[in-house]
Amino acid sequence: MEFLIEYGYIGVFIAAFLAATILPFSSEVVLTGVLLAGASYWPCMIAATLGNFLGGMSCYWLGMLGKIEWIEKYLKLDPQKVYKVQDWIKDKGSWMGFFVFLPGIGDFIAVALGFLRANVWIVAISMFLGKAIRYWIWMEFVFKVQSFI
Image 1 (cartoon, rainbow, N blue to C red):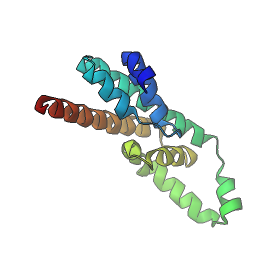
Image 2 (tube, rainbow, N blue to C red):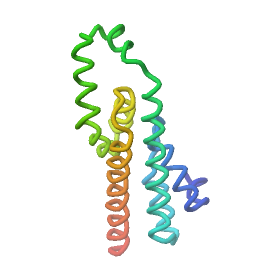
Image 3 (spheres, helix red, strand yellow):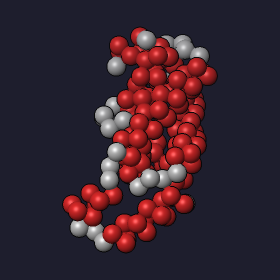
Image 4 (cartoon, rainbow, N blue to C red):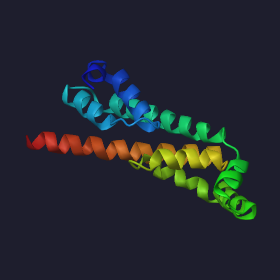
């Protein structure tokens, strides 16, 4: 983590990207370290949000490599139910991309949205908003705590 903190904004971008993939990683630690080292607010916000967004979209594209037939074959689910869920995801479920920022399950949501062929544009917009709001809240928290110390 110290290695990434030393790289400043690039380190924040890399940490945020890795945290959004299926790798277990905490971008908040690196972001906090860079902020406490005196980095500027907006470059940190942009680096964290873009890195995390691109990492989340890589999970989405990873999911796109999957095939619906695998669900039917290996999970023994009724094909009609699978296609019904897929239709819902393509229509309204794409907005679930907003929740990709959630720790623990966010990566799986992104992969599932890709696997079920959710609307890429809606997923991208909602995912970007969710990740931006997450980092905004975190950075505000860091600055509030720092002002008390």
